[in-house]
Amino acid sequence: MQDNKKAFYFLLIPVLLWLVMLIILPHVDLFFSSFKPNSGEDTYTLENYLIFFQDKIYWSTFLYTTAYAIGVTLLAFIVSFPVAFYLVKVISPKHAAFLMLMLLIPLWIGELVTIYGWVILLGDKGAINESLIFLGIIDTPITMLYTNFSMIIGLLYMSMLFMIIPIMTTLESLDDAQIEAASDLGASKFTIFKSIVIPHSMPGIINGSIIVFMLVIGDYLAPNILGGKSSLWFTEQIYNQFLSTFNWNQGAAFGFLLLIISSATIWAALRLSGQKLEKVEN
Amino acid sequence: MSNILEIKDMSKFFDDFTAADSVNLSVKEGEFVSILGPSGCGKTTLLRIVAGFLEESRGEVLIKGKNMKSVSPENRPVNIVFQSLALFPMMNVYENVAFGLKRKKLNKQEIEKEVLSMLERVGLQGFEKKKINELSGGQKQRVAIARSLVMKPSILLLDEPLSALDRKLREHMKVELKELQREIGTTFIYITHDQSEALVMSDRVAVMNKGFLEQVDTPQNLYRNPKTAFVAGFVGENNRFEIVRKEDKEIITKSGMRISRPCLEFTPDVMYIRPEAFMLEPSKDMEDIAVMEAEIKTILFDGANTKMSVLVDSREEVLIALQQNAKFQTLKEGDVIKIGVAYDNIKCYKE
Image (tube, rainbow over all chains, first blue to last red; front, top):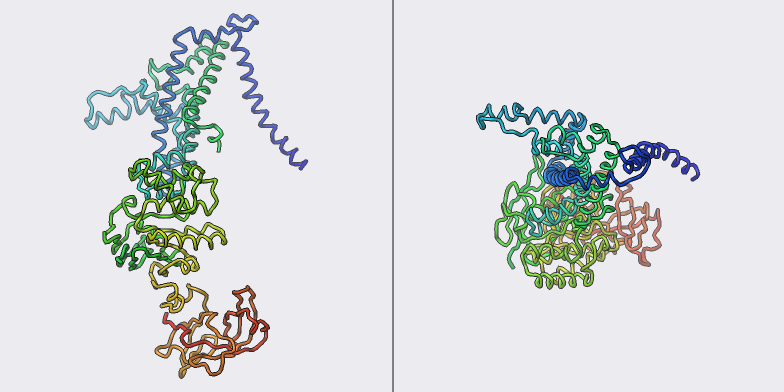
């Protein structure tokens, strides 16, 4: 018993070190600097936070980012659910393992490389436009790159897997007999999905939605590289504060606002959908 | 009464595996028919074909005289009680039972009336608001049965629904299920590998082996007159003897036991005698019985099911039922006794 306790504390050390040094300390530091004025005086002020609400460009960018993040999360669900269902319930486990591997590969390559992959695909002289022109379907290239469309594609592509996996996990625990029983009782395919499959996978859907929403709202590369002039992402504002105007205190305040408001959005979404966070963890 | 279900020369092939082999089965309205067989014999396949989850490869399935080919499960007048029960855990008892009725587009009052009367019938009044995971095994069972029965199916298919219950509850549910079926008069087709379930509940039992229906008969006939060696070996307990030759009205088994006068018409490959068919110390004036001398090897005491293993002709080991009455209670290991068996109770088969 005593030995067990010792082992417990011993193993806790790396976790605590990680948490304290890499997560808590930097956040505490940022938290304090977010209340310091840019002039360098040693006082505390709410100025950095007020600027966010006073200057339209900041809060409108934030609203824009949140709206798009919610939209991308919804799209990720719509695209991922059939994929997860197909992998778990339709094809044999052997084939599913292979396809799962295919889904994982982009993750190994890294986000930057996959995003440049999309640049190559979607550009005016990219693979898609060139083939469409070659096939005679279009005469002039369709502008896809540097638009909201390409940005959404990029965000979707890098976050989809994090929706697929939690949904797959919940679907795996769904007894096929329940689907058959519903069908036996006269339910149409749509009803089976609506009243059996979706409710059963709800924890996975919520789980995946939280991860995707957080990933998307905090992403920098896809909006920056694939997005157009109008695709202003809030992370770019934070980036600018830190690295263009060197206003670290302002950047810290924006960082905290992003954390607080996105957490609040998730809380509100959970409330609205009648789900509980504890249920998600199971 | 007309046949509610008719399966005509139906076969099902999976690649090179035959799951159902020229099955013929007619079920009358209101009958309780069991399909009994070891696991992997194709009984679940047969049930899934009737339900519409699988399609027959050959032959036809008629329900109320209508060919069911390409009729989807939701449009067939049959309902299943699944082995895993497949209750919907996200719904309460009421919603589970009402699920099918809602699909039928009945109005709210009708649904409520039907659900409540069905719950009362299975003894679950007052349980409407309960969650599925708050119920005991037996209660879940009843919800599953209620959920199917409320649809008023022409045939209720039950796929080993009692297998998950503990023994005592299973014994109880057997009786309850039989009574319920008699009360509502719906045709039940019951899949099981448990012969006791099949024999106790059914009007008729179809014994299935390797995709083939060996015998379809009343429980009594299955027990008394098994048509094939498989049925003799599978239904009830039995002693199996392999036969080597026949010699002047005597049959000689592989280990050398001689038994007089059974199976006069042909030389069988195997012979079966039930443990309870043996008489101990038969009186001398009894006719048409084969009498042998046996030495008691071991007594396997199990209350009313007590058996003993005896050695006949010092060679063949035979299992004999031992009644726990005053006459034979004193028998002990090593005793030599006379045992007799009526010729009628010796069953011979070609294999």
